[in-house]
Image 1 (cartoon, helix red, strand yellow):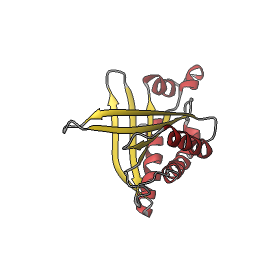
Image 2: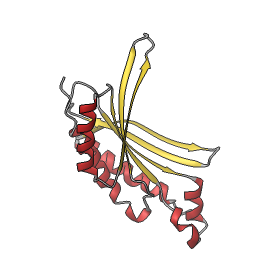
Image 3: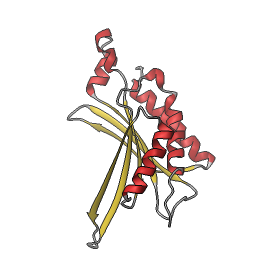
Image 4: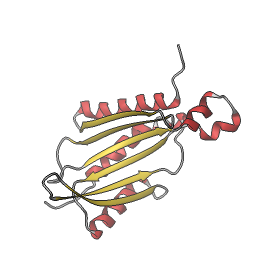
Length: 177
């Protein structure tokens, strides 16, 4: 038998917290990806959700992704005090809109996210336009909340809070129909 890594333990806690909320009926899990990149020996796990009761005419989704690099894993497995600073995972939060938001709405939602996540977080927004198969433009806006540091196994319980904050973030959306 082997000891699970911090990544594996954090993935189990995150997945449990999300599926608990799905079971309660707050959210609906719409996607789940677990990837191992053999060229960089990194792992990532992403779980995406939306509110069961729509708050806007568009389908707004949220996701939490954890990511561990080879350096994170080796730091944990090689049992060296020097490498302890690299032990853990990065965590990113995503809120996705299937429309391009104007500057006023972007600023308002950024303010809402700062109130929910705190002003120490790194919050970015990316708007894009792609062409669909029908040659029609498809717009989107993606907000990303990052922590700018590793989340360690000792902070694993914070993942449950992150699920709650993500749900609050999606509920904070105020887009007229």
